[in-house]
Amino acid sequence: MKNKIKMLRKKLGITQEQLAEECGVVRQTINCIENNKYDPTLELAFKIANILKMRVDELFIYE
Image (spheres, rainbow, N blue to C red):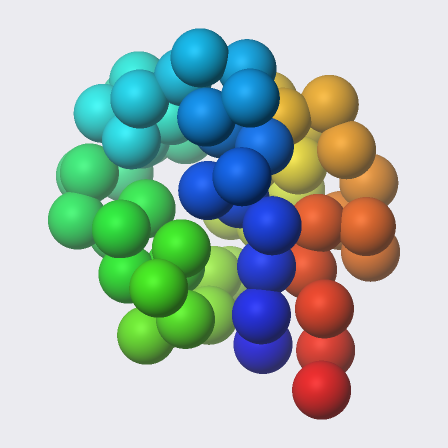
């Protein structure tokens, strides 16, 4: 599953560390999600989308 997290995070000026802290995960988790190495849980996907002010279906692209 691809996503737009990195692009939106940078646009908002949020670091991986800041996003991870707000989501309650480690920075490496955000890095793996951004690089399509890990699909987040539904709960984490909603947390990320909320922080980045996006809907989950806009943020993640299911292929």
